[in-house]
Image 1 (cartoon, rainbow, N blue to C red):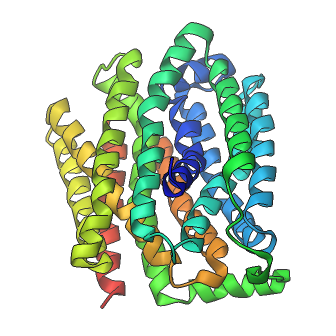
Image 2: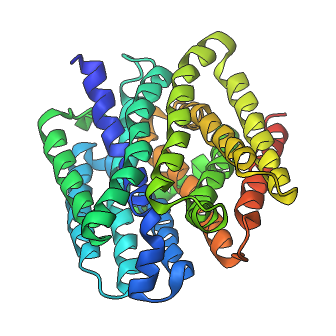
Length: 388
């Protein structure tokens, strides 16, 4: 395996912790709600807690990666993730599971932050959009396999086996990174920063028009995906009658679309320019969300609803990698901090979207559909306003 492909595999594996930790247990949410109490509405809060942890944890891991290098914070984060995953498998109450999911996310998001920072570190050797596309290819396998694997594990051994499996995956990733992931941020480039300097870096990013516009637009677009993740188990299984064992297949099809489209991002960006490709892709996200809302309002058959969702998720295959490159590339000296803040915005939007879907739960598909529609349209409106 070439160095470039090995690096893409490792970074993709690190970035896959979020979809693995989210998607593997989606079809088990009703069972978890029944066993631990509170129903699916309470079980959905374990998703919201994970989104919050992913957003908040990145604010810590980013500056640490810029100060200590990429490897050390990564190894500590993975070790805590392994322990938290095992404790999730042993949880005896919904409150405990919600808290442990928060800790699991706070630790596991180290991989996401550092993966994006490493892409920036090696940008002088490897085209960052193409590397990000290969990373998305590896990462995209997770949403395909995770719900299917999780469904089989839950059916054979119960939902707790899913978290034991996540602990094993964390241990595998830790071992591979110890052996094969190089340090891409040497001591000479590290930021020996105080807390004040870190806050100053965050302030500089927030006030930078290039970063802020891309982070907010990407956050809105990604928020739609998290609304889909939160709402789709109920919508697919309870409303449209998809058998729980088949839920993973329908969910995974969206990931296939994400993977296929993500491989076009580098070619399109090279030919037409990153900014233009990003804007067109965000516009397509808005169109997909609007079509989904219209389908649900008109009572369209499941095929039409599902096709609109696939359209949305597949288009994220361009929005996510190109948006990450546009946001982080201008800041090589604080790539970890920029990566962290970008992730915080994205998963902060995800937490809000997931909370709305849970709060507005009314026994229909409308809360999920309207969330995707509103977030998609808001993304393109903001993109147009901030790039004038």
